[in-house]
Amino acid sequence: MAGDRSRYGLLVATLGAILLAVAVFLPWYSVSFTATGISFVQQLGNQVVSQYGNSQLHSFLPGFHASIASLGGQQLAAVSAHQVLKDMNIVLLVLAALALLDALLPLVLASSVPDGAGRSLVLIGLVASGCVAFRMVDRPVPAGGLVALSLREGSWLALLGGLMMLVGGLWPRVPAPAAVSDARIESTWSGLSGWTPQG
Image 1 (cartoon, rainbow, N blue to C red):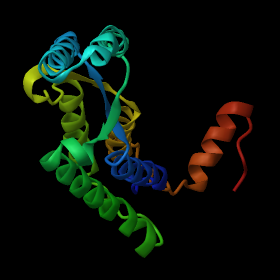
Image 2 (cartoon, helix red, strand yellow):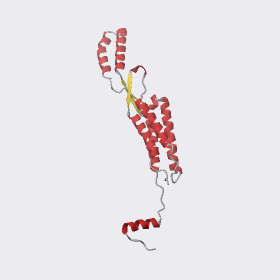
Image 3 (tube, rainbow, N blue to C red):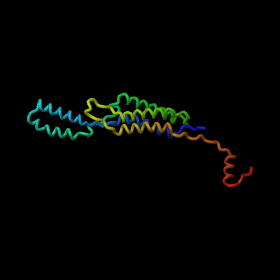
Image 4 (spheres, one colour):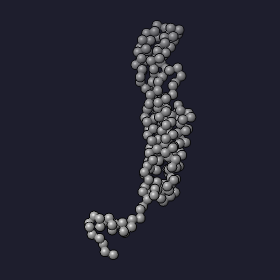
């Protein structure tokens, strides 16, 4: 006979849902110049100086090129899923809210966790983890290819939150309390000691 849902599994799923919701607003990607972006900015600087520049501005140009070149590969800014993943962030927040409801309600409202509690956590955790992993592999591509996006901690924490919801849903059930009969205890004891109790 299967036992009740484990409270530990529901707690793990609850923490995962909270982590996922918070991670949506943390930095997911760092923004840095690509080689194309650096070249574009340098060419733009050349055009501005050649069109509007005087001798003082011309003398400033080599230093400008060097400072722009030094920005290659360095983080210029950080963006969150809330900023760049307009549809995905809503999906992730809805999934986190559903997981919270499914995991918290049985913990709060019932003295013992019913068997059906948290049943959808596996599906919710799987979908959330899949969405996050997809956006970690297939990152948004800024127009023009002037800047590149690399992963930051927010995406990893969101993935961890989704996996925690999945694990919480798969958490082993608490075994049902078995009614152990006196005869079973006596037979076990007699097998160990060789002594048979007298009725």
